[in-house]
Length: 399
Image 1 (cartoon, rainbow, N blue to C red):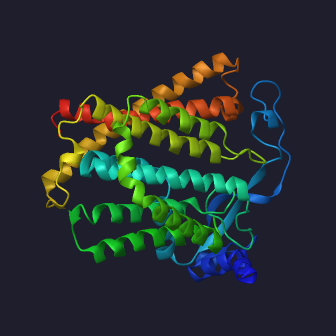
Image 2 (image 1 turned 90 degrees about the vertical axis):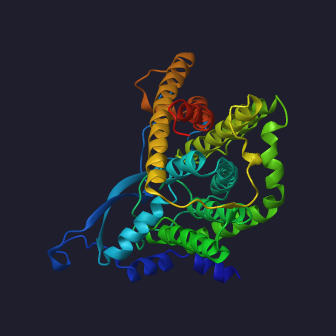
Image 3 (image 1 turned 135 degrees about the horizontal axis):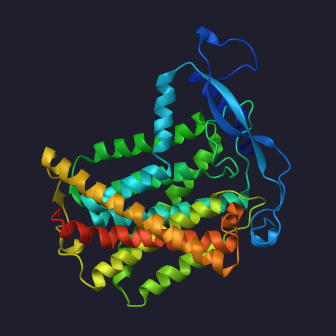
């Protein structure tokens, strides 16, 4: 068993998968095949280099929970693409597991499809992402080595590898959607199952193609998510009802997630893991509070729970598409405005409170600034998405 696990964690296995899909490292010198130049992507070198420490407020010392070792330095790795079908397929599939997908798909589900499904998806998404992110910084398993692996992504290279949170999120979203809709809407179950498997598989394979994870990282993420779904699924109905249980519920929905984010495991060096985790958890807290506000103040004209248990999927029409895109555009614009306003305001308050120079970009990475700023910002975004945007839709006659 240990030998099998070791082979699944081997970077050579990832490299062979990339070569089979037509992705090769470019030679250091000489012309490229067919006279074509390589595509280029910024990645991080496996060795560590010197990074000067900042002094005073905004410093990167261990007391701020930022770093205990120098962070890996970046270089540009060149590569040759010989099969552009796989290249664009897996780059697109990788985007399905990134922030840009979730900040569009989840609000679209909330505003245009079914708030009930949106609530289920967000709760499970937040749960699996928090557990996955914490597991990374506890296990501290490295990402694939390069060479031999070609790495196509830059931002998260300072994060650890096990488990793959892309694989976790894709599996959680697709199969939670399947489980939550099969008794609520009438459609062929086999079709839904195939779509869930295809979606999660493409995202998982994209993590190998982009060189971000080993096979064991991906399998670990899928198995961990499957276990979480099995363990929590019996309690999903109870969780749905928590937002109307007590007037004190919003306090718990803010305090508990904030404590979890503020006491996030300290990494050996700074990485975006803590910030990303805070963003996800805060958005979930904001959405939960938004649903409570809708219920407590009866802001929803038609309570979600009053809808029939089994519904027919409405026919797709051009008018429906136009209405959906209009609602989505109005909502996204408002969310971006709220995000920018609250982020700037929260940073200014925190800079002033901790007497930090505004131009010190590294100060934003300090625990006492990064976590409160992210938390306030994305909690506000979550509340806006579930409460303010539907009210605006009603005012504009879009409901």
